[in-house]
Length: 405
Picture 1 (spheres, helix red, strand yellow):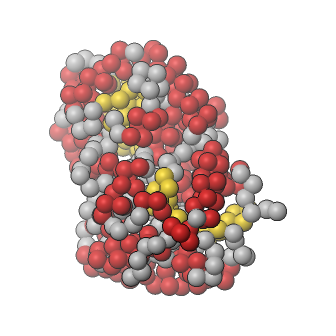
Picture 2 (cartoon, rainbow, N blue to C red):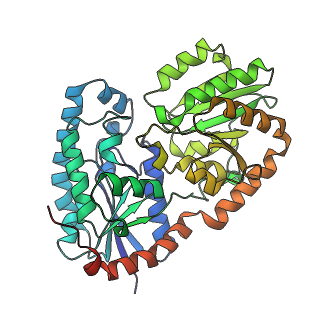
């Protein structure tokens, strides 16, 4: 008998549409869907971001919210109204799923109504919302309510999925959630979309220029200031290095100004946001791919950077801050290079080493893609998760002894 999954997402900016600016969330949703389907499940979806007006998904939405408290408050009210409307609609439209799998969103409890009807509720979280949305993103006004609803959802769901061991530890430390309720499922790669054999590289500098590339959201924790300073240092050492920073975010304007101040503006390109289907061709035009998270003592340590998987799936070596996901994925000198987080000197030294070994980078990239194909596809992630979830659900009467509110 075919098993049925209902996949839910209530965040209005998270969408599977190509126009969605929240590209990482889009890719994660599609990856989860494809992973369950690859393992024989029938997946039906209720994704609020696919139902809202197109203009909500793009533009400088988060920067506009960060600049205005009244806009943040209005956005919070809209989120809560959408949650009330769509939770009921989702229950009415799904046909008896075996499990509900929900991507956590601010003010969202869509799976709770299914759980009250006897359907197991699996909730996936990618970060502590009450921290990130009020610090790095500054996109909510009612922070106390975000935290209260987030904590309620974590306590009530049957299984809480976290994308890293560090996030699991942060949840247990900062919220009263028992660790045995949380299962860690790291990010993975869509190896068909991110396939170097199916795209033509989009190279923004000449073949003789060594391009270090980044794709993703430009927040402080991404460590992009260090990347620009490293490029400036390498160029002062007469190395033919340039950078391409693909994406958008709060830091973009400041980074553009910094590149000019460092005298490297002509060697740094900011293409801005591009549709997700175009991202692989940009990555294919990079020589080395950057993932330089900082430890801001809030959330960077527990991120599972999806970009690492994308880079490596595209057959590109990475230069990555030495956090858990990078250490797990990257063999230094074999599939990429690791440097000490937030250590500009080590980043410069590591980038110099990569430049000196640039004629061998295609071999490192091939090894990187082979590692992704063998162990880090969405199909393999979900295949490993299903039996763990089955066991946890079987044990839940004994396990779910969390005090009620």
